[in-house]
Length: 312
Image (cartoon, rainbow, N blue to C red; front, side, top):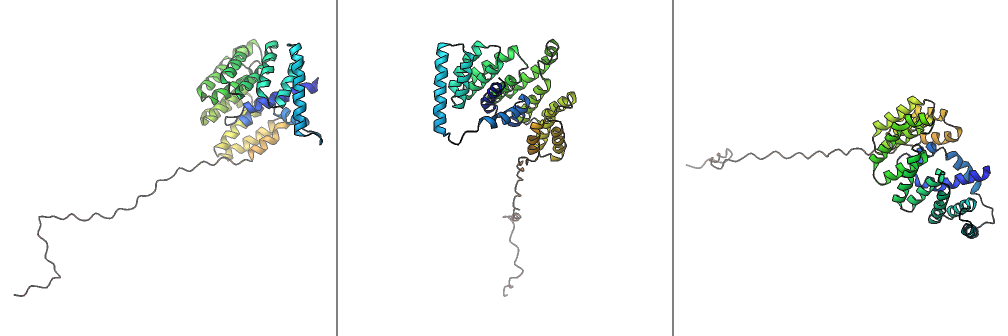
């Protein structure tokens, strides 16, 4: 049972991490917010190995045969969750996103409470260019679970892809405003620090660095032992070329982070920040020659002092 659960998380990641690419800090911060990078690294290494006799063509054929078998079961038993999940995993291995979406839609229909299925469905729709469909799924999740971090991050990234940063910021700010009341009703329903990290990420992507730093500072003050806002702030300093300010933050983040994130933090700390192009200086204009003196056309010409006097 545990092995199946680990394998299922891996396939959620396969599509999920692809959809979560696009904004400045997303490849670094998103896996940390979701808490899944370590699982991807460990599970992925154990599931990607193949035997020496396995060829890509034979593996493709085996997967297609498995998919057909699952489809036959689903035809007979439309609500067979085990068969649908097997079909989903096989379609993902085949990189058949439309086929995976079809299986996911059935899984969401029979398991409306399973937001992991719904988030993966939204990400799949986004991958095939159905942004309206993805947006609808994300909003339906957030209506009942406003603190669902996977849905929040996915919807924010979708809004940024649509060049709607203010909508993304508004969504996150509204979530933070409602967090105290929501957490009073259901403790822990909204992870405030995670939402703040995503908000700072959006600000940084928009080069609103002061606002990003302010959000990270607020999160660090509320949760001083949480490495995520410290790490995010270090990256902002680093990208601005402020290495002296970034270095102690990277060190603190590495000390506070769980072991599976420390190598990643240390590698990030060693990266060279992107070069900021120098502002071109205007070239100095060549000196103009002194203007010739104006000649008074009415004045009589002066006698040439070097001319010989006329003979009398």
